[in-house]
Image 1 (cartoon, rainbow, N blue to C red):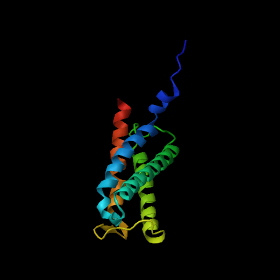
Image 2 (cartoon, rainbow, N blue to C red):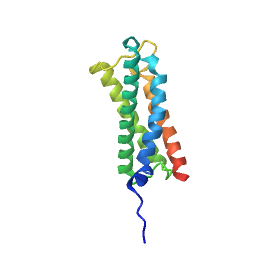
Image 3 (tube, rainbow, N blue to C red):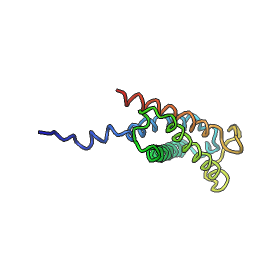
Image 4 (tube, rainbow, N blue to C red):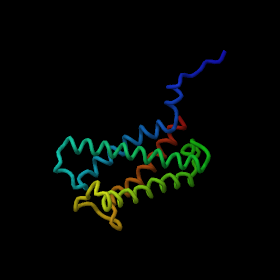
Length: 150
């Protein structure tokens, strides 16, 4: 007799769930650490807390989009554990390209946020979010690869 695994147990082992968990932790830490580089600290603690959590949630959506694009391109959702370095480059590239566009659009066109004078710029885009989308995805792939082996 075959025993069916409950849906919640199968969902828990999905790579996307691990990506969301680790991604929320790492991006949340990054968002709060880079917070002084944005010009919104005069809006109060509740606003800052909401804003950084909102940005972290947006980071999760970017991660999921980049993950799924990569999974479609390489026809596997297990690309982080398969050590497919081209897939890792696609994953990082997708998040990075979106971040470049988003930072430019939100600071230049939509005026959704403003950099503080202390934010280093690369061609008018904040260096901290660019660095975030180079370092955090690498750490996430490492964590996903390790958790896939255990």
